[in-house]
Image (cartoon, rainbow, N blue to C red; front, side, top):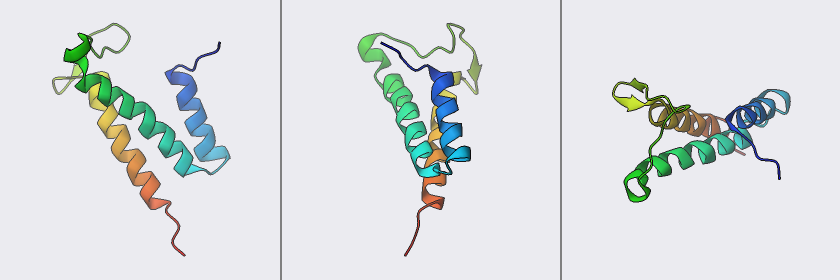
Length: 88
């Protein structure tokens, strides 16, 4: 069974946004992936896990890379989704 990794999700999101001009679907894809990262971070103590970027503990403003990037990407995806809302 084939699985997608983060690079493939990114490539699909870029393809949807640029080639297909489907920013809304690209935004939904980004929100679902980054939402999963945020949920995993919120539940990390419950399952005794952690959010590491490539098994390397690097931080930005005291947060792990993934935890720092996830809300940023989610906010940008929500903004893109909202800006493409078509009003009649």
